[in-house]
Structure formats: C-alpha cells, structure tokens
Length: 321
Image 1 (cartoon, rainbow, N blue to C red):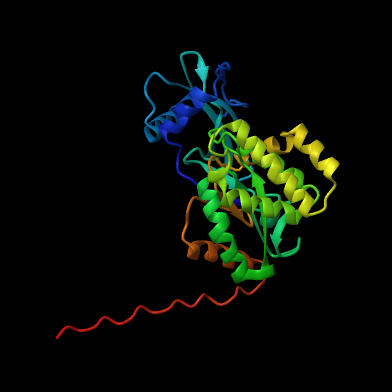
Image 2: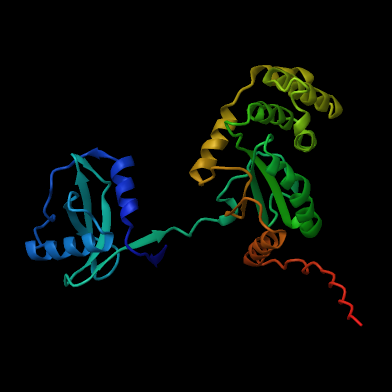
C-alpha cells in the first residue's frame, strides 16, 4: 500500500457526487462514541465548507467516526445533502487531538503491472507469453487512427524490441462505427483457430477499411464483405470450415461486450488506447514517448532496453556570400 497526500475534493466533484451518485438521505448521526463535541464538529464543518466552497443550501452531516489505519488519526466520514438527496460518504482523517483535518487516498500498488490488463487467450505478435513487456491495445477495426497505429507504430515497435515485447489486441468497437462490431466478431472467429489468420485479417481490414461496404456503403454490404474475407482467410489457414461458418453465422458478441466492459473499467472511452505493462497511453503520441514507456517497463523487469535509435543530424546551413 502506498499513502499519497491529496488535496481536498473540489466542489464540482462534490456536486457531481450528489447529482450522479444520489441515494436516500440517511438520518444525521453524531460520532459513534459521542467523542466529537459540537464545537469540534463546527470547526470541521467550517474548514470543509471553506475549502470546498460549499453553498449554504448544502447541509453538512457527520456520519461516523471510526478507527483508521493511519497512526494518530481517526476516520471521519461526512456527506452533504440538498433537496432530500445526499452525496456518497466522503472520508477525512481527524487527528486524535482534534487539531488537524486531513484527506488521503491509498492506492494498491501490489499487483503485477504486466498482468493488470489481461492479454490471456488473445492472438499475439512479438515475444512469447513470458515476454517482459505486454502491450494491450483496445482496437476498433473501423477506426482510422487505429489503422494508422496498426500500420506504423507496431511494426516500428517490433523492429526495435523484437521478442522483448508481446502485442495483443482487445476489442472496443465504437457505436458510431456501424460495421466495427461485425469485424470484431469475424476476426475473433478466425482467431479462435489461427493466430496468423487473425492478424492477417486485422491487417487487411485496417488497410482497406475505406473499401468495406463497397460502392453502396451499406452495413449489409459491409457485413457480407467481412464474412467473405474471414471465410477466405480461413481457407488460406486450412482451419475447420464448418466451425468457422457456424461462428460467423452465430455472431456471438459475448466476448466483445466483456472486452468493452473491461476497457470502460480501465477508463477507456476512445480508440486507440494502449496499455504498456499496465500504463495507459491514449491518442496519437510521438514514437519517442512510446519507446520511453517501453524502456521503463523493461528496466523495471530487469532487462536492458535496446540502444536508442540513431537520428541523422540536419545538414549544416550554408552561409550566404
């Protein structure tokens, strides 16, 4: 566990709690053992109201006082209410002598960062399952920015780091992309039997996304083309045609929806989004930033990163006569 000092919540955060996380207002409580005097309660309220700039129409409630795991402090839980609705309980720390009010957040850093975002049972590129760096990308096969990353960033990473990195895609098809969900299902149908076939299909769809849907640009035509591409790739890889055909016909989105739920829990709201041994990077970032993150992950794993790429110096400017 790591204990990190944190400033008081902003009022906007508090109001968001009251609006979005409302529940029935609990009855106002005194402290558990009555150890908070009215005078001390007033000092706590004034300090919190001042720091949060709380409007007068928000009522202040001390819900409880309990033992904390921070030496010298108890946990003081308060909430605010307005119009019959209450915020979620907000914890503070109150010193035993009643002279200091504090607020801390504790973050669990005991988990293995490499496995904090799972890549289990997904087709992979690069190193073996025990490669020191795992890169998990949440991908939308109809996303042009994902296509650019697939074509440029990942080949550069694999060229530089070889088998030190393992790259996995997970699905995050966006609602505004009408055939992205179908593409995710179809590539997974192929991937269930052939990792090579999966990546061939992913690469092709990303590279030819503007052709999906034909001249008609209809969802029905896009679905037809995607199924055909998956079937053809299955034949190339000599996988079980009956099983592939059944998978394509069923269009089971259970695994896709689970992937999307995991992504949302990780704070992903757009694509592309990468997790490099658990560290998130979103949007188009310079390659040097990505390299720096991978290098840091390698060093943390006790590995030596490859030498920095050599950049050619700009030619010297000619002096005028």
